[in-house]
Length: 319
Image (cartoon, rainbow, N blue to C red; front, side):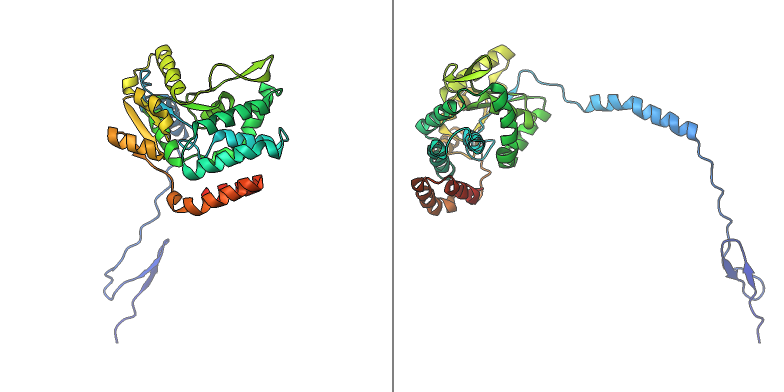
């Protein structure tokens, strides 16, 4: 009978030896922990901190002051008409009655379903909004505008359009909103999206109180092209290198000004024009065409009933 293998204990583990004493495994004492060199680590941390500004500077894109991008707002940056969202928010705050907002609700439903800006509807809606704010202060509208953006507009920003704007910013371009909406609301939207600024319709105010009249014309259609032309002259922009984005054929004058026009969620007339002229087309809407027929009848019924609630239900179905 063979000898019983000897069992040897080491600090880390036990192992066995075969007869004759030959080992099949070995034991290694644990390595000694090296003391932390806090001084060296502190020095490395200091060097990293000093290098951070250099790294950030290397990653920064130098601004190209000759290039800019111009974005329409209604149905280009945001679903629906910003002036309607503003009016609805003001209505909730007792700025005016349900009867006052009924016409605006119908025009908003028409705009959302048909996807076409009727110049007369737009002009009427803007004029009505100006009459609503007459007698109120600029500070009051700006403060409420911030609240209304959060509750009614922030979730209606088209992610695709927002991404396009961010691409321009990342390339060092300046980005402006150009809209018929009140300049106070346009500036809020631009600031919340991190854009350069905004051009919008200016309501007259005296001593900080709105009079209910406009300063100049509403910034719509050809007026947008004129405003951009003036801005380009003031800022030294090369319009041939600039981009413009809109959903409406009413903005063809603005789109035609720049070297890189793009139709966003276009109406039928702008889609055809963009296709014929080789312009870029981007459509971020989903299920819109399939929903038009049935929802249009619902919108007519809601408007005829004079119910803001009905109009709201239709809008929820389209979101």
